[in-house]
Image (cartoon, rainbow, N blue to C red; front, top):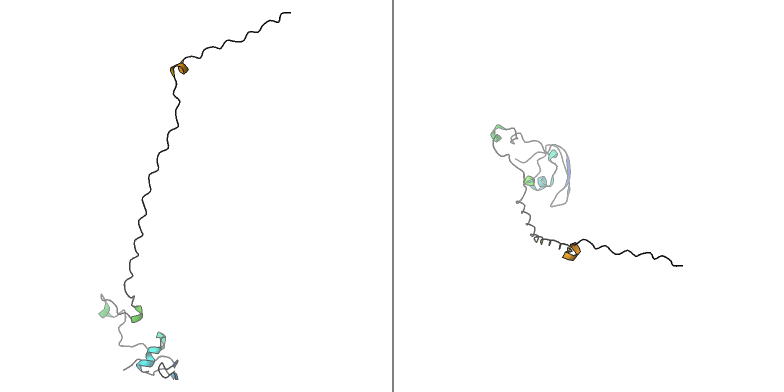
Length: 120
């Protein structure tokens, strides 16, 4: 027994390309049924298991083919390691002036220029 339609469906036959008008209650053959993609076009199957069914409690619910997530995604490749930063050399200290013993001695007073008196 095939699935029954709940609504009227206008569809092109996948093999003969003939326009078909299916009425509610029709049970199309499998070739035509696979071309009907609207899930609301079908009657609910009273014998189908629902997620509230006690037989499913604690079990994994059945999945449809389009719910299949497919193969596991491949992990992203690890990024290439970045070269370690070279240490920045410390700057050279500024040259310091070294004082000689003469420079450390008290400065000698410079002789002042004398004012010479104008001789008239």
